[in-house]
Every structure is written in structure tokens, then in C-alpha cells.
Length: 385
Image 1 (tube, rainbow, N blue to C red):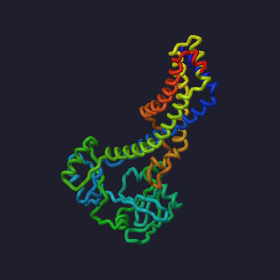
Image 2 (cartoon, helix red, strand yellow):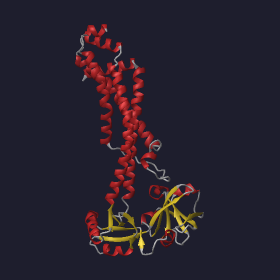
Image 3 (tube, rainbow, N blue to C red):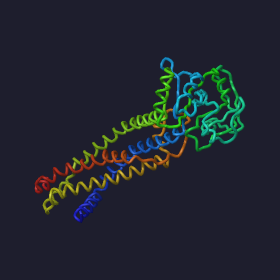
Image 4 (cartoon, rainbow, N blue to C red):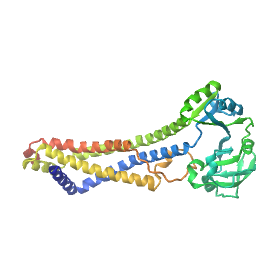
């Protein structure tokens, strides 16, 4: 152990003697690690936030398909589902999307009765009359409106409708309600020109979550044109989307990692005359080849660990202090009104370990292998060269 500590001390002194060259490598190394780690941190945090929000949703959502596309579901579809053993409740839901060409934003319009946990997050009054609505904070900020103000929307018939804002959703619910407008159900049906015997989908609650898959099969049997979607499937979809987007960014970042490896290899294979002379002197005074390789291993490990730690800290700061402003638009997606919220720190140690293997191992190899070639050469010829 004492021998290794001495080798490490000598390796650090050797790095400091060539601080200009090693500092440039360290800066590039740190930025490469920071870019890759930022993608991993942001993706993991968004997955956790999505899981936390969607966990309060319905256990099963039943849609109707026609010609392979989502179609309005008849309200009488709820009757056979309610009769299935294990079903707690079936709630028809009326909701849809609205594009405002003036602000160039997509809004989600939902009719009452809404999810109970959504109403708990409401500041102000619940909309009760036909021309009353409640809106999310993102909409209020975009339009510059507040409680008591009016919002102009154009309905399915092309008519302008003026709605009074009676409530705002709390800031803590932004991820769920940021682009949401809550209507009385009858008014939203009129706004969308939706038949009174139709709904957008059916929200099904069950007593035992482990029976969701079985109930979904029964729903398909009784209603062949339906598409039951379990909560786990929705969570899996979000997980897949975030993985795909992060994978896209990591693929782009892979070019930077490859460029860094080429730079590291060029640096390592281009051992300077002073470094070769130093290896020759060490061999001449009695150092073994294993000692020289251990010295270079400690040099590479010291640079790698410092760059990895600095890059990880930089990525943590970028993601959780500054909100990952450079990467968030790509990972979050297309929503114009995607909310500003504090990301909860979430780190996957396995992913961090893989990142360390992909960045630390190549640099150490690029440092040790060329030094081995010089270490096995005759010391006299090395010093003469």
C-alpha cells in the first residue's frame, strides 16, 4: 500500500509538471462527462415526475376505436364495464385539445366532473355556470389573465365565446394542470359540438390493481371495438418516450465522446521526448516495467476521476440548479406551455456507473498502452531517442 501511495504521489507531481497539456485535456474531458451526465439526470428526474403525477390517474382508461383511430365512446359502454367483478367505478370523461393560432399554443380542455385530486389543487371557485372556467398557471401567464378576467375562445361552430375565469390551479400542480382549462361538462359538450350520449373516454377504477390486466381482457371481450389502457401501460409509454429522447441526445453526444477518445489517444500516443526520457531514466535507476505502468495508470486514473467528478457536479448544477435550460426543450417535447417546475434530484447509480466505464476506461487505456511500449524498450535507446 505504501508503494502505491508513493507512486500516486509521484504521478500527481508528474501531472503538475505538465499542467498546461493536462489542463486542456481535463477541461474537454469534464465538458464531455457533464453533457452525458446532464442527459441522464434530466431524463431520470422527468421520469420520476411523470410517474408521480400519473400514479393518481385512473387504473384503466377505455377508449373506442373506429378504423384504427380514437373515436368518441357511447355512454352506454359504461354499463357492461360496471357489471364486471372488481370494478369500483366507471366515470365518463369529456375532454379534448384546442389550438390557439394567435398565441400558437395547444390547450387541454376538460369538462366537469373532473378528477377529484385536480379540484383540490384549485385556487378560487369551481366553474359552475356555462360561461365560467378554471385555468392553469401556464395559461394565465401566457395570456396575462387572472381570476375575474375573461378569455376569448372560438368554438366548433366558429363562434367567439367569452369565458370568465373563476379559479387558478396552484403552482404545485403545474406539471398536471399547466395547459388545462376546466369547463362545466355541458358547456364543453356545446363548445366541441359533442353529442350528449358520447364521451371522450371512460375512466375505470378497480378495487385490486393487480386485476387490471384481467379486467382489460374482459372489456375487450364484451366491447370488441374498445381499447382499454392500463395505468402501467401509460407509465411504460412515458418511460419509453423519455428513453427515446434521451437516447437521441446521447447518440448525438456520442460523437463528442468519440472525438474525446481520439484526442486522448492522440495525446497518449504522442508521448513527448521529455516523457520518454523520464521513462528511460526510471528504468535505468531500477524501476520495473510494472512500476512504470502503475505510474501511468495512476496518472490516467487521477485525471479521469477529477474530470468525472467535476463533470458530474457540473451536470448536477446545470440540471437541478439552472433547470437544465440547454437540454430541457429536447427532452420535454413539443408542448409550448410545458411548466417550469423544480426537478427532484434523481440519480440512477447503474447509469452513472456505465457512464464512468464509458469515459474513464478509454482514457486510462489510452494512457497506459503507449507507456507500455516505451517501458519495454531498452532504457539507453529510449533516452537517446
